Image (cartoon, rainbow, N blue to C red; front, side, top):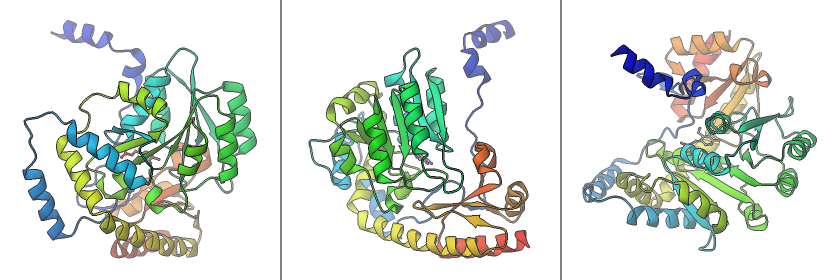
Amino acid sequence: MTAALDQALAQIRPDVRAARAYVVQPSHGVLKLDAMENPYRLPTALQQALGERLAAVALNRYPAERTALLARALARHAGVGDEVGVTLGNGSDELIGLLSIAVARPGASVLAPVPGFVMYEAFAKQQRLDFIGVPLRADDFQLDEPAMLAAIREHQPALIYLAYPNNPTATLWDAAVIERIAQAAPGLVVMDEAYQPFASADSLALMARQKNVLVMRTMSKFGLAGVRIGYLLGAPELVDQIEKLRPPYNISVLNAEAALFALEHADVYAAQAAELREQRERLFAALQALPGVHAWPSQGNMILARVPDAAATFAALKARGVLIKNVSALHPLLANCLRFTVGTPDDNTRLLAELTSCLS
Ligand code: PMP
């Protein structure tokens, strides 16, 4: 019995056995401000209408028709026409996985600014791709253009990710710098617009000009993190390659129907995003005013802030039932940094009150 288990384990790649699983912090019964979720649900009447829609879905059939419809509906929602290709992922996480598979070959590399979204590196490593992390500028967390261009020249990355806005810094990059990076790139450039509902700019015009640029979005921050719908837009010639790698039925028919319903009520979500943008500004001003705290301006639904002792503040907030994310260990540039997801007005009031007493 044990020998059989050992033999089976020995077949798993050593790098997989050595890897650590993605850890989701337990959050039962706490104020959850750690994962950039939209704190709002649909109004009760719409929840009931959604329930009726889901009850009518044929669960005995594989999903295909509704997911194809959803893909086009998302492209329309983004404001692009039929000349733009679109494919769906089970969250944009899955798309990052598929993009990594698409470019994986010996010696190929993936490049992204760091600190950034951790899954770019994790999925690159899964495919044995080299990951080139180019540090952001330390003071304002903007792209270091000379360093980015030098790294592109040196490593000739097959794939570059630019999260726009970035996680965890919540920064948008200078448009002219992105354009020069996209022109210098020898391969694909993925503009990861997970936080687009909260940002003042997007990359669709760049995508139209530069055919190696793809735009990746998600419904997660829009308000459907539990539904797991990500989408990739771009030149059909490129998107079709990713489409070949997509598991045929990766989107549940229930998830597709819920997403279609949400798009029919996009105005409700847009109002929620507007409220969260307002709350972000309130939270930013309040964080900046706290003694010993430095917060960076945000274009997302989260705020990065440096505190005197991140581990102590994180633990004290947790003990008071407020869960945020301590990002200090992710990168040396993030020493003593915490990331706060913007919540409802009441959530933010509570966060600020607890934080003020933790810091005093
Ligand atoms: N991109 C960025 C920049 C993110 O921060 C996240 C999640 N936090 C994702 C992609 C993944 O989102 P999802 O898989 O929920 O679509």
